[in-house]
Length: 510
Image (cartoon, rainbow, N blue to C red; front, side, top):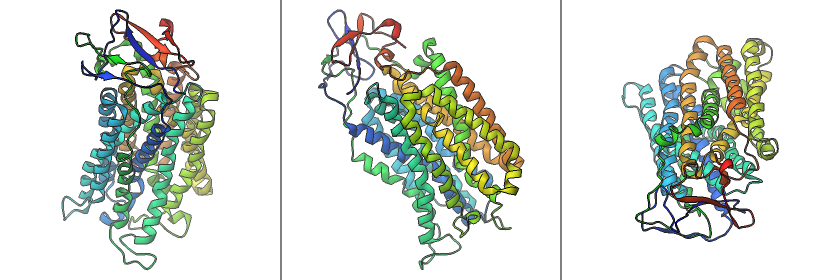
């Protein structure tokens, strides 16, 4: 069941074109359920996105050990960790609009091309200055920025494809299931890192009888990020750009005016401001916390377990937990992963707003506790601290990390759906860039406690924004969120669940 779809039909007997269609283009769709292939593609794209965003968190530790003699090039590491997020902002703003114009499937293929190129280029990174090993992080900053453009474009496209292909009853579950693949991608990062390090070793020693191949492990970690994109390029989406209703032939009149909705025009409309405050504002605050912690979790864990040699070398694959950064990250990912699937189960029962409130509140309490008592926990039980720290990921995933992905795709009308979704996601990555740029310096200067207190404040602000501006649209069709700026001389009608057509209720428009 596709659920209700909307279409603009002229009251004068002629149809009018939206955004991207040439005047002589004829768009025709048969009445049929959407292919599940689109949902699978969106899910696999999110898996690729998470892996490529997060793999720098363990790769940078291996790179520091190899090129900097340990944690001795902090500013360069921060720059490389932030570069992909900065590129994602560009990608989200660009491909959100591109998806509304040329179609979700074509735009998705373009994002994958950018991701493939950036991931492969990162795998072949080299120091720009042969006499300064830390300059390799400058090369990675460039290649990961390019990759980030593709990674960022996935967010608005995947969310919109999943939401438009789901029915009203389970739309939240479908989109959150798509997003849950990010948890799998995040878990895969330390798992693959452990495998590559076990086989090829670090720059100091080899394992399993293989001769040490300097740098091979981190190159494979980063290069592996190209594989999902390569697969998806050859697995084109079955989705066609809806213009906009099934079973209706829409012929664009050459003389008819077109309704073009650019990002600047959409942002200037007061009708969207409260929704943008809720969707974009909450995403911004979440990502300050989430990516600050996710990308630099090894920095926190190093302090928690007091691991590292006097020279600064950070052990990544030791025999004990305190000396095994990969295992520590796997434990964190495993604690957080069930949060995604709990969100899938309850997204349509509790609703997006309630789950987001629960998540932000729990995160605020947990981070406050970590900020106030982290020193005591480090002295008494590092394992307990690791578990509590893992719970922040759990409530992030069973909370705003899942809901912020869904809300923009169902809160805005079709003609600007991926455009404003892209803007909200870009605001999220702006927060992620801020978080990743400041998290490591705060931890290095003031300690874990100060960073956790800052995270608690951000979570409380997200709770307040959710309470004030988020609308819970569970069970409501996406038709009412269409054609908020009607074309002159047109009547908005929508296909109901029985397959008939009905006028859109003006009072129900977003």
